[in-house]
Length: 470
Ligand SMILES: C[S@@+](CC[C@H](N)C(=O)[O-])C[C@H]1O[C@@H](n2cnc3c(N)ncnc32)[C@H](O)[C@@H]1O
Image (cartoon, rainbow, N blue to C red; front, side):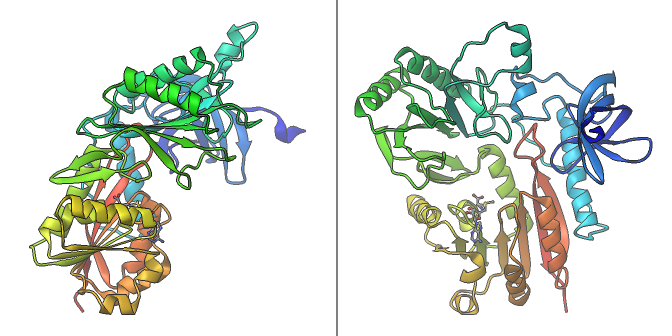
């Protein structure tokens, strides 16, 4: 019984932010407590709701002193949404914590000392910085505790918005989101009202009934818009009514698709996308490179900062013009194409075949002919035979997923001995692990974090590794 008793811990000074973005402090006995709702500098009483051997997790019960780094969250959904957890922390302080996250990982995991990590390259846009959002329809929206407390009876209202963190069935209805250009709010709010008015039923994630399922909204810096509506049945009468009305209501939509998803999950990439109106793709532009983005294409979600990230990678590589390079984990070739005019040749490798198709389409679209793209796992594709059949790389750019590089890839890189490796990462912990593994032959000479996602704990980091002279 005692184990489940709610326990309060008083007077916790919040001193930092941990890996996943939760604030952290210590009890007077030195025990670590992760605290929801607090920011570094707050003094709080905490209600503990989870106990582990080496730490506790809780939420703020009372604020005894407010941190000087606090600011008012600008979004009315902030308390429940969880999408922008750090809105109540000044941007300067967010960047300071991201810097600490990177430098701690490099010191603790990478065993890298004496490196002057350059300041985080912050985002100019603190709002409206995303170019893609996905919203989910739900026959009964999620009700906040305040709404439940303040209302006698709650009607079963439908909702269109974001999943509550970690839940497949709880959807927070969104009126205004500050992540994407405001026209995205107009499209979503119009869709919700239209579907209610025309009795296009909202999906019930438990019973799997209902017609309207998800909507993906994408836009580009060139002002192009793609909207993809997922419904559960190929009911052409309903689909045409909705799509035609959307075209009339939003003539600026460049590309309008629908998908029929009758599966139990929201994954769409294995389904056929039907173009209802407009072009098959939208165009994004970074620097002098234009990228065709189809409905299934991956693209970096903050275009302005993607350019800053690629510019940082290129600055670190310091190309002279005669280099042969590899771009590992190339996606749709975004970095490869961006770097192509500065080098002799580029080899890009990526496991998603559709992304490699996009890379080839985009090379042709830009008249780029010094890039070759291969679909396959880097671990298997980058074989001795492959290396022997391609120009030896002077620089390797690598941008792996959060898990970092496979140990076999690290071994291959150690054998390849390219003079420079530029390592772009969205996870400083796995990057630090890989840098340590590469340290037999490489020394890290530059490092710069780049903030792609203000108000979240996420941080990208670029490292330059140079081959030690033997
Ligand atoms: C962080 S993204 C980088 C994409 C690209 N550099 C860009 O900026 O758009 C990582 C990419 O690695 C791909 N990937 C993941 N595991 C892979 C593997 N084992 N081999 C090849 N590609 C992989 C993913 O599909 C994804 O496109």
